[in-house]
Image 1: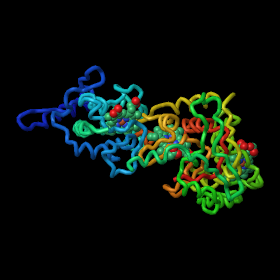
Image 2 (image 1 turned 60 degrees about the vertical axis):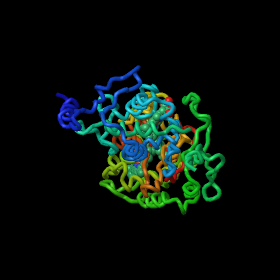
Image 3 (image 1 turned 90 degrees about the vertical axis):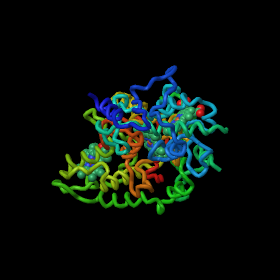
Image 4 (image 1 turned 30 degrees about the horizontal axis):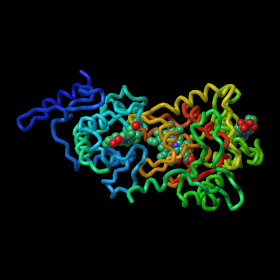
Length: 164
Length: 270
Ligand code: HEC
Ligand code: HEC
Ligand code: HEC
């Protein structure tokens, strides 16, 4: 059993509440629509836009602000301008498309500079490292850049960005 | 107000690097032909820095990197090793090193690609009978700073054909490789997005003519390979070691992107 299917199995037995039982959808098990969108929630738990905003700005979580201007966050001085402003993203894209972009933007935008935030397979990368240490990755701990719930939170936050 | 980023975009339009009010060092040049038109003009990283940081490099008294070169002068004269000889004993005045930094890295007589540090350590171990200096060690920083200063104002002139060609090709390939979990290549940041902001950082064209650099953030000299390491670290990638074959090849290729830009001696960056 691989490490990933193991952790999926743990998640399946561990996360039970409200009578329903959900397991996070692992990156390998995502069901894509038209190769670019993800209609189903990765967790079954609705995203929290406030937590998503925090993940968007935090350098240690999504750090999306390093590449995107977001005028919903004037309190953050330094906003990168590598990608387009995300203003109005919630009006431009469907929730399924945003889930696809946040999980693996290179499907919607081939060769994009935007990192893949939901992929835990080190074999897909060239010299993946142990976070920002410049050392080789640890196969025991290598994980997605955002957790499944953080993807849901960020998507929920982006859906609130309807003005542009 | 949010868009503080756009206020910083692009290199400074007309700043001139004039050291001590007299030595004019060009910070813009015609791009080398091998770049195939990816840049309209090539720029020193100096043009992308703030007014304050740029000013530090215009005054040798304010440039903290010069202290390293000063210490390097003492080391140049210091006899060491089983041969009890100093650099000066064989090379005479350090001015004899003029032009050396501008052609590094280069292929040695055994067909290996060597950086300045390799040549220095070869003299230490083979000629002086002394210990090799670590790539990022204090004595290495001091002496490479001193030697670089002798080429101040001389254009980067690395050789990329002949025996150097295979190394250059490998360096080129590396430059376009998307490393790490963030899958970012040198080109993603320094070719496709120079002039833009990546959060608080203003992206330059990633030129190497300013090295060794005194980095205010580190409060010390940062050798080029250490900068490479930092840039690969920022891709959430596994770096190569300073001095590794891969980094010497990358050094050759990166240097060749700046062919024609003058060596700054010891630059100051934030
Ligand atoms: C290293 C740069 C980088 C980072 C970090 C980054 N992005 Fe992007 N993003 C891009 C680029 C470039 C594009 C434009 C797509 C392309 O490549 O053509 C983009 C596109 C997008 C789009 C679609 C833009 C539109 O038209 O509305 C959204 C939404 C988005 N990103 C959200 C995010 C979120 C959320 C994060 C963090 C979790 C993030 N990005 C992190 C570079 C980045
Ligand atoms: C994630 C973006 C990113 C990537 C990828 C990246 N760099 Fe950098 N690099 C920077 C930033 C930010 C700086 C500091 C500001 C500047 O000078 O651009 C920098 C600085 C440099 C400098 C110093 C320039 C100067 O004048 O002081 C060099 C040289 C350099 N990078 C080379 C490289 C090489 C070679 C690679 C590939 C191995 C690379 N970079 C990959 C972001 C990046
Ligand atoms: C015993 C004599 C001797 C001593 C001592 C010595 N060198 Fe050398 N060095 C040489 C010779 C010979 C060469 C190869 C011929 C040449 O390029 O001048 C050389 C080459 C070099 C080169 C390469 C120059 C080029 O253009 O390729 C550098 C740099 C250098 N030495 C630096 C130093 C430093 C720094 C020291 C002291 C730490 C030192 N050397 C001590 C004899 C010496």
